[in-house]
Image (cartoon, rainbow, N blue to C red):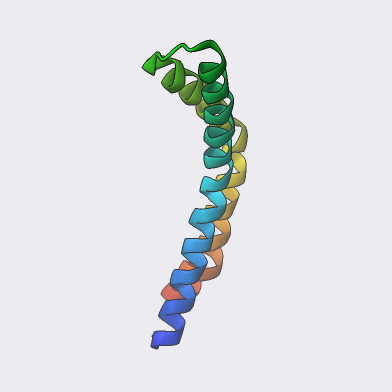
Length: 87
């Protein structure tokens, strides 16, 4: 493999990782923003108030998007790993 091919494969896998993490990170960002606004408005400074809703929403989003994430992994495997193994 040449350097260009290695960099291309690396770029594809990094892009796949970005696409797979995007729903989880977006959900965590939105829940963190809502909880932060709630804490600022009510002056409640409880640490578990930020952790528990984020964890719950991220688990929900993960189960909803698991098929999407698996499809990305299968596409990457089919387009990058199998051609490299077969020749």
